[in-house]
Image (cartoon, rainbow, N blue to C red; front, side):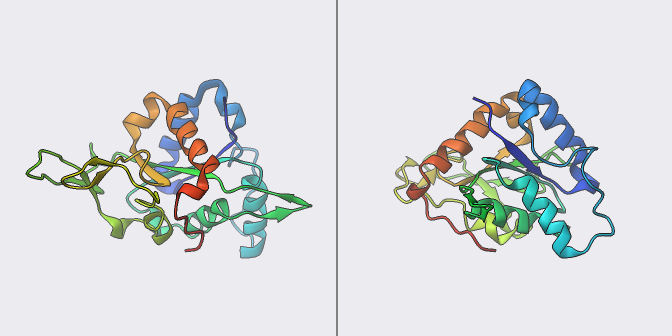
Length: 202
């Protein structure tokens, strides 16, 4: 089932990937509620007006896709948008639910090394290492936060990258192969939100 989605991305470096995501969504892109060519120009708009317009677009969506790009933290808005997505907001007597959130790691210079590393344990596991300094605090706070974690390995205590965190981080190649899989996973986690220690503030 298609979900109403909103995509957060740093325009100057991730617009092409945003477009690829919409293309990969196919017919489901009709449910995309984010910025389009018809969206109002906010270039010279005051902060509160920008927040109002963004809130109108976000409200009523159920899944947030965040494009994780090398300079994402330079954006003035993405951390605020994530925070808004995670909160229950009442507008015109209608309260929105907390969105499911999935991060799509953008490939840069041919790979993901700018963010993702690998560790090796004696048990044979090779879990990813994420450079948390390149992510917003609100993303880091909502990773590895499943209350009753099921380890993929009892020896090294590795956690499943898709289900062990409320905000999963997925490489763009994997996401583009099957976006509905990851969108649905994010939505399903929002349906059982009490299973996670959610942090809703930056």
